[in-house]
Image (cartoon, rainbow, N blue to C red; front, side, top):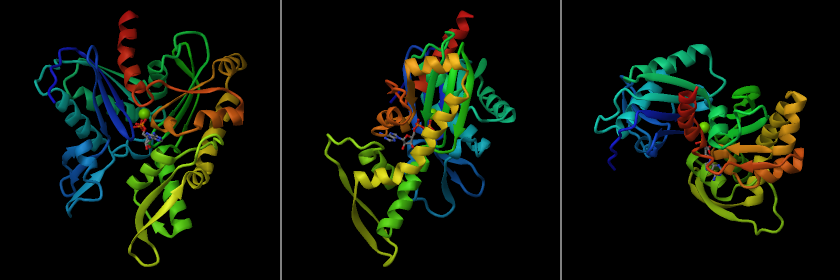
Length: 333
Ligand code: ADP
Ligand code: MG
């Protein structure tokens, strides 16, 4: 695929699972997993994104795949920088990005030092301006919440490494919480469950597929329950084995981590000033990030805390769209 890029405004969602790049006037031009393949000796990046993800678990000695942002913090700055560089080159093959302005969304829990490091990394790529925006604010803008108004809006962004919960009013975060429990943790919980219940060791990719295909967190009595065949290694014999896992088993596995997410939402609302909390009661909670797609989460939230929850129209892209839109807001100021 070839792109001809003339615009000067770029939004980047630097997520723990996926990195997205939006160019004003052209839309989202890149969606790739935040993964790199590196040479273990000199730590140089050989491949980034999808190409790198397809190598997970299949690399020869001397080559490894790394998720530089795993667990919601920038675990490896150098690799993050190299990955971003590769992604920008990928959409800028004709070299038409002439000193663009770039907005980057980042997890709200990072330190000033980390923020400066992102700023420096991006600045080195020959840009005219770098704007950093906190991920929940970008997610709220991209989900169409009225963040400019003196009204409380609640966003819960469930990504791979972190869940970011925030109440926003007048463009600022009023109360927030970052949890290290999100999509990756759900996958790990499924791995543990399958190990316990079936004596079977499955890989991360299989666990994620189970979560996406048949995962649910709220029992819908009207609907027929799904199941799925999974393959792994039998821990008793050491040989490959297949078992069938049901939707209700997955739900059972996910009870604990999901309860922690709901607990954190509740705690955030309790810390919110009463006027804004009343707005949230009224307008509900917006869910974004890939984790928001887990079946039944909106219903479970309503059932547990009696506040309506809605999944953003475009949960995987709202952060990058919000980051892109934020430059337009800056222009107006
Ligand atoms: P990040 O912002 O951290 O990069 P994303 O918002 O891209 O994360 O979401 C990635 C997470 O969403 C992964 O854990 C992935 O497994 C999960 N995910 C994606 N689609 C679904 C789905 N349909 N159901 C449940 N989880 C999903
Ligand atoms: Mg995200």
